[in-house]
Length: 155
Image 1: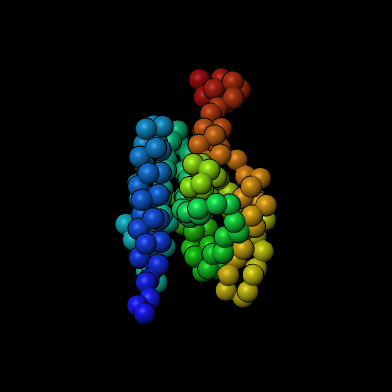
Image 2: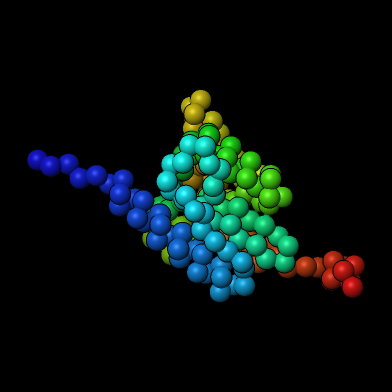
């Protein structure tokens, strides 16, 4: 009996989600691009999946896809690279999680995430953290909107 390799299908699903996210963010007025080596397992590179910029705010996004809400495990090195890129860009690192069964995107800001070390090499983002997180597009819209005080200060 021949075994099927689900890794290529998972990668393809991730690529589709990244392209969908880029298109939605572009329509929202963001300058946005998909990382050149997204999903390529580049060892030396520090490439996030998606970078979105609007009104001087920079968002560095790592995209994950799940069919239904569940815990997510990330390699510790991957998380470190995401945070390093965000630090160098003076941006905010966000896990953008596509939940296909709910037809929604969730935003888990890495700075606010309740991250637990699962092992020495993996970080766990719990299902409860994901369930309690805000819709990605609502989160980003809130982050780029300015208060009246900020608007008056800029004049």
